[in-house]
Amino acid sequence: IGGGLTGFAFLLYLFDVHHWSSECGVTLRNICYTILASGMFLVVLFLAGDYPYAPIVLFILLMPFYLAGIRFVFYRHKSTRMFIHWSSGPLFSLSVITTIVWVTWTLVDEKNEWNLGIALSEAAESGCVANFEDYPNCESYYYEGQACFHFDEDLNTLNFNDCEDGEVCRMVYADCYNTFILWVGPFLASLGTLFLSFFASFMRDDGSPDQEASKFVRVWMFLLFAMWVTASLAGAGAGVFTTLASLVLACFAAAAIFIFKAFNMEERKEKTQRVMEKLSEKYGAWSDVFRGLLIVTCTPVFLLYLVVSFLVQRVRVMTFKCYTKPPNTTESLRNITGEYWLTIEGRRIIRVFQSWDTTKVFTYAVYWGLAFMIMNVIVSQYTLVFLSWLIEWTSGLNLGVVTIILVGVGMTMFLLPPVPGVPIYLTLGIVIIPVGREIMGIFWSICYAMGVSLALKLLACT
Image (cartoon, rainbow, N blue to C red; front, side, top):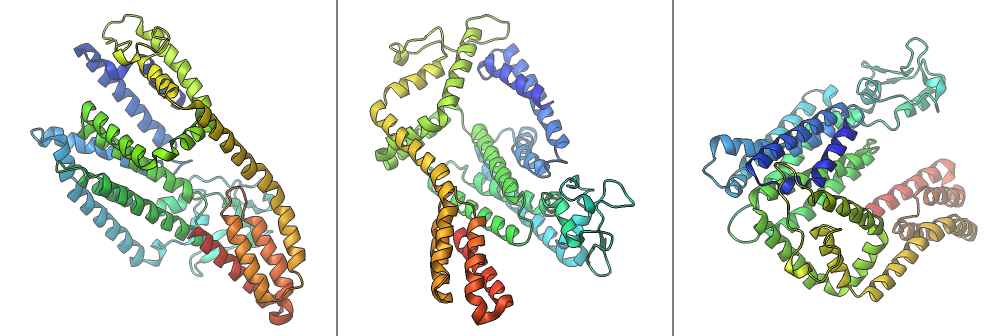
């Protein structure tokens, strides 16, 4: 179904469905959009078992359409922008009520609180598949395909008496986060509604809300980051980043739908032009640097777009019933070749590219390529060599000096994206435990190394 919908959407793009303006074309376009939206709805529901956050994403994306339906039925005489602005209050109230109900539900009964034991025992029912390939001794003798442990309600913990490998068997669901997403789902939905309520409050007619919206987006990203760190420390970090990233994308997609409904094409072009002018004014001196990065990362995408542009232009030279042809050229593109081979949009991109200082842009592109090579190849390859040397060099120092050196080195290496965290933690264990063993003993030196590792991780997160 997903592949068919993708192909159908691509055909609609080839035939310029957004340009159809005749009565027949508008009717056919609405039918096609309805089919596409219904198919996407079904795909999301079918994927809910593998991606438990899919219904939450769908809820956020459908909210603008639901509000559009409410306006069409009851407030048709009001402008779309004014109605969206009015909706901020009800959306905020819905978010607050949902959060209060969910928090109250979790506090009323201990069984409603997040419990890793209950989550693992019900992982199979939530759609997770146990990893018995890596843990073959963790499969139940009595029930094929199920884990050997079960949740003891009296002791409020997992019972591993039937497992040969004991508590190691909890790792069969190490990659499962369905139960956590299902538990926290109402709160995530309320977060999405909260985002839409604040964004709707910016859709007013008195002035530009750009600055306020920018501040809100920064606060929103900080809150999501804090949620991710909290969930990771609570033991539910696997997949949480993917869920929060999907939630953010869904919120911004819903905000884009709000903008599309609130402003006509001319207003959208005007606001886009205003944003580009502000960016150019603020970061104009760095424009060639960003263009070099664009060359390095997006050249394959640009070439693919030219191929698609050629296919669209081949369709535009044909004639169909209900089909409205967009213009083939403009006065500003008269000196750009390829009128009969590329669309007007593709030729505009070529015009923008021709206006660049290609020598400087390609020079910065080479610098970006060298930076990627250094960060992803050289740094990652020599990390273990450097840490091995550090272990040998710090072996004769006292505990305080070793701790300061390792924290400083660890913080520096955490700032390098290609450097993984595991070698840093191994270095802390290898160096700190032998040095602190004579002072604190083996047990407390291990605890000290764990505390330093946790502090280093939290410092790196902040």
